[in-house]
Amino acid sequence: MPASRKSPHSHGPSEVRTRKDLAPVIRRELKRLGIRLRELREDRGLTQEQAAEIIGVHPKSMPRIEGGTANPTVATLVAASVAYKVPLGDLFPDGEEGT
View: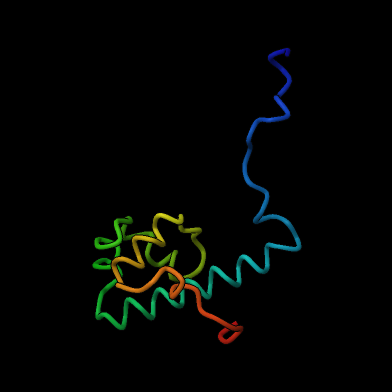
C-alpha cells in the first residue's frame, strides 16, 4: 500500500460524540453522571481536591467531571465507586429526573 493512503483499518478519533443522534444524549448523561458524583462527594464531606486524590485523577479534572464536560474512563468510574464505597451502578442515576 502506498505511504500516502491510509489503511481502511486505521483508527482515528471517535465520532460517537459528533453524531447528531447521540451527541445530545451523551451530553445529558455526562451531566447526570457528574451531578451524581458531586452528590456522593458532598455526602462524604470531601472537597474536589480530596476526592481527586482518593480517586487518582488530577484535581483540575474534578470540576470538569462533575460538570459533565469531561469523559471519564471506565477505570476512573471504578475508582470513584471504590472511593465513595458504592457499587459502580450507583454512579448512574435511574430515570429521567434532573434532565
